[in-house]
Length: 386
Image 1: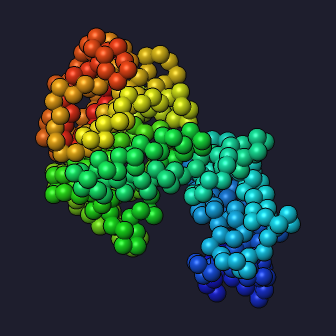
Image 2: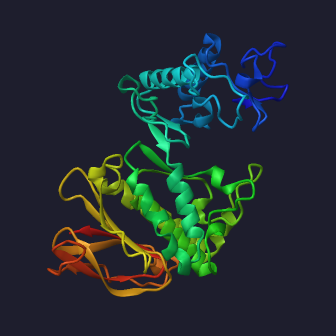
Image 3: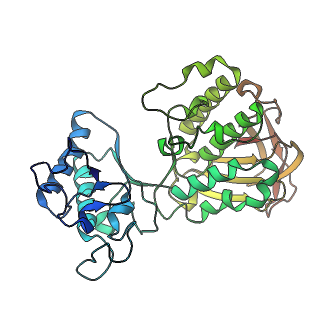
């Protein structure tokens, strides 16, 4: 879609040059903007050449296509009688679907090393599957469900989280249907929604601990990561495009801790194939325990392509430390604690496991070996077999 402002493409030559003449197909009433006429060759070529221009001249790494659902459905945000069915009587926008496929084919043909990403909020199948297999051809799709559930879960006071445990675990049921991106984007920190840290409950210590915990859970969860600027330092204000990131937040220790946590998370993520190699395959994920809703604790394993690439992730989502907590391990041996969001260097309380724990031949959660762990308050732990 494009704005209805007179200085733009609207009535460019005095007519609906880029949009349909009929407002039932060419005007978006909810957003007060016009919809491109994707069935017109000149418009399709203009849009595809615009995409290639950004890639070739500005060397961008990818294209995120906004509001794909509004392109796919002729009746999107319209009441009965406000839209025109397609030639088969359905609500699918055949012209836009054809354009999307052509766009992705053109981009990946010219630039196979970039990504096209769909912001698509419905259950349309095979959004991130190749066109020749019947898909729309995008490289990845935003996981809107994960984003909504995660932010809603973390906005709950910890004492109430046990009643919303499914908001943290449900996303795995569909995590591998598409090539998903986990988006904490600009859309979540604008228009009165507040900054990420403002969504976290509790006092200053707890809100920062919750933020570090959420980022750790995000990096352990299958899917590629997207974090909008300012989140990595826990800035207080929501995004305002006329203003800069609140770099002065780094004058305060808690925000320094969030920044260092993100730095170390990125370092471990880039150096541990288990955290990214099989992001789009259920071979790369395995639950250890998702049933402990009473204590709001989850644990899972991320796996790489080789046998030795295993990361165990444990999240304690309340401010209550847990001692001698049993977590099943896939094998015996020493499990090194590679990340602890509650470490003092991040602004935490320093509660942890003194560098790791030995997996003992004590059955737990259906496994022959288990770890006896200290789980820090509002903390996430990453372990790796030595």
